[in-house]
Image (cartoon, rainbow, N blue to C red; front, side, top):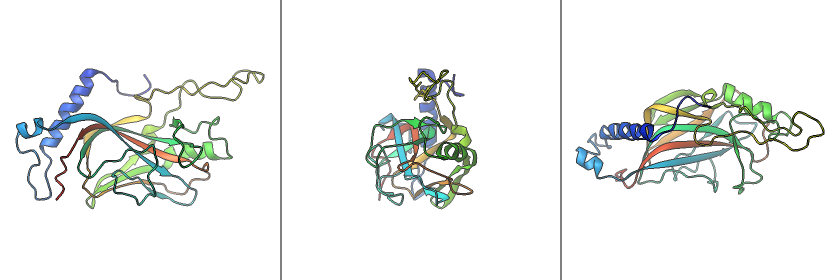
Length: 240
């Protein structure tokens, strides 16, 4: 198995029950429980869900805003492959992935995600090594309502070099048929959050990628892609 956890109906049910436990302790802005009784909680529609944030990378910045909510446009315009949290919803994150992509344009939707600097994909000089260095030196910091919830989430948790990798000429120089990088989208690059992270669509979520120094090189449209998987509770943020 390419990651430390396995997917089954039993583990997903356990994640759901743990998410309900976390939600039962959630308070609103007035310090009151948002779901005072078990019946209030069970009345909510809780479904599996994935949020997705994307950030254009460059060679000058050392801090990048990762937009989680729909109203957070400080990172620039929303890409068509993003799926942010809307104002009225709450999301319980159970695991997430930090990957890198090389779209052909700002509106491209036909690109793959990578958790390492594949030399057959990141072909511009020094970009493949720069992707690897991103995982080695970068970390994510999450501040919620001016409180530092996650001060230093290292990206090395998400670094994954597959057993089978793309190459312009595998084994023999006369063989021009490349392999495709092995990739299991269900688990590769994902790492569980414990305790679970709670995102409130109406909250002040400040998620950032932080680097000690700038990337040496990037492709023209290279992006950081962050996927959060967990459970969505719609129309429950109690926006006032």
